[in-house]
Length: 227
Image 1: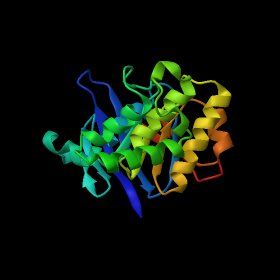
Image 2: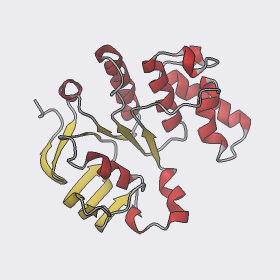
Image 3: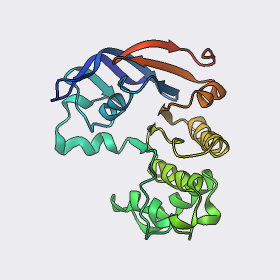
Image 4: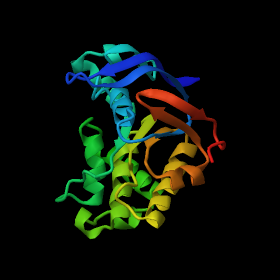
C-alpha cells in the first residue's frame, strides 16, 4: 500500500525556475528509497514538498492519506506529526543534553514526563547512544551528533523519515554507521526517503533508487538492481 503518491506534480518558484515537472511517483509503506541526481535536479524541492515546506504549483501530493498541497498553513502540523526529518547539519540545541535534545520533540506535545523518559531512553538505545544521555553536543563526535538528530526525528514514532544528505558532513566509516542505524529503523516499519550524493552508500545499501533529472524521474531502480 502506498504511503506517498505524487501525481503530475510541478513546482515553479517565483524566480521562474521550474524545479519539478510532470513528476509521478509512488512509495509504499516500509520502503527505503534513495533519491539521487545531479545538483539542481529537484531532489531538495521534492522532499521539501513532502513535509510541506514548499507547496506544489500543480498536481497532487498524498502523504499518509493527506493531500499535502491543499493543506492550509494552520493544519500543517497534521502532516509534520507523521514525518521525521534529518538534515546534513545536525541542528542540535548546544546548551541542552542529549536527553533534553530528544525529549524536546515530545515536550511540545505535552506528554507526561514518565512517558517522555521511556520513549527517549528507548530511542537512544536504538541509535546506540544510551551511554551518552547526559552529554552535550560539543562533547560528541559528528557521527554521534547525527545519531542524536535521528533519535529526535523518530522519537514520536513517525510513519515517514526523510533524510536530506544525513552523511554529508561525515567520513566514510561514520557514514556507514549512520546507514546501519537507518536500516534498523526501516526494519521496524518506518518508511525512509534519503537524498544523497554518496553513490558508494547507495551501492552498498541495495535499496530502491530513484534518479531525478531536470525535475523528472529519469530512472527508478527496484531494490537491489542499482549497480
